[in-house]
Image 1 (tube, helix red, strand yellow):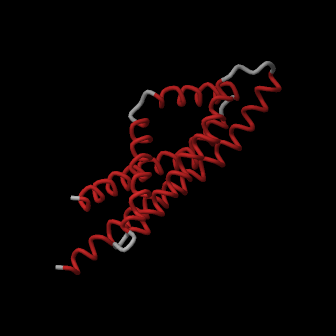
Image 2: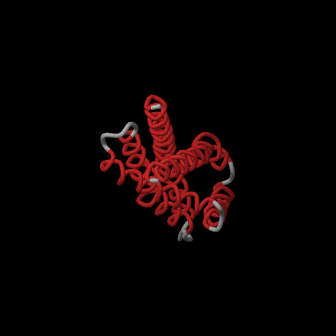
Image 3: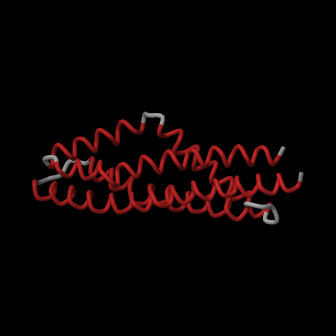
Length: 169
């Protein structure tokens, strides 16, 4: 029963990490570049619209659900250290929770909040947008890499547990 629960969490985490990595990859590779090509106020308005829309979308259960599943896997792994794939399970959970969730909460969310507030001058608006494009995108690159690595770790954990199960037969 414990193996089934672990396998379900691994599948949920692998798929969730893959979906989130793909979204972050899109932002890192072309969405932010496209927003930068717009007039500053249009780019800012578009990003603020994206940020407010995402909060009420299916992204949020995926975001928090994948984080929770990944954290559970990282916490369970040391208790299963002698089982195949447990190191991948631990690494995937740790990389995802720190490299995606913590970075999002500590860096990307505060930058989103700053972008959403009304600047007091045109110079301040220009500085906020320039800083946002540079800093938010940098942190998003790290979230993309972390989500991708975690996805790979969870897949490796699944493969390791399947390989050992087939050898036992």
